[in-house]
Image (cartoon, rainbow, N blue to C red; front, side, top):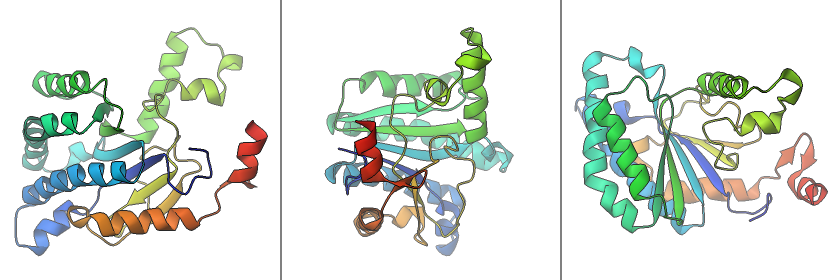
Length: 242
């Protein structure tokens, strides 16, 4: 696909609204997060069916540690349950799983589950699902700079292209479409470097309710946009790059 394809090659999603979804149903927040996992598995298949090659989702930000300890603990446990429940299905469906974020703060058990998910899907090519966990956009830029410095790069060698190779999503193209559910209209420290030219799509839909209708609405809106890179329409930018 080229840069002006009507189907985005890479979609990024801030999955917001789990807690409010549960509150509307007089349930504890944990049930909203559980429904959010189900919605994610559904969304992976929906985006893959429509030709999206990369899906990156914001599962747990570096700021989420400030939430109540019981909610944080529940989220950690939910990750383990989700891997156990859905890994085989995702692997069979051709989904490659990658985890991006700072792994130092999580338990050995959780890291092992992530490593299993990544290693068991490493050869899959239908769609790459990147889960941002304990991730922050500012953290990503800082860690990229530190890794570049550790490799001995000097100031004059550190270009935008070089730094991009050290970011957490270096294996993927920059997101074409950035979606946030739940009605908020901000990017909340997600993919600050990579989303520089992403098309933004905000929806009132709470994440657990995000399904085929919402996917198609976001993709249809994207298809109508004339993408610009530094003021240059995408079609012209792609021609200039050749």
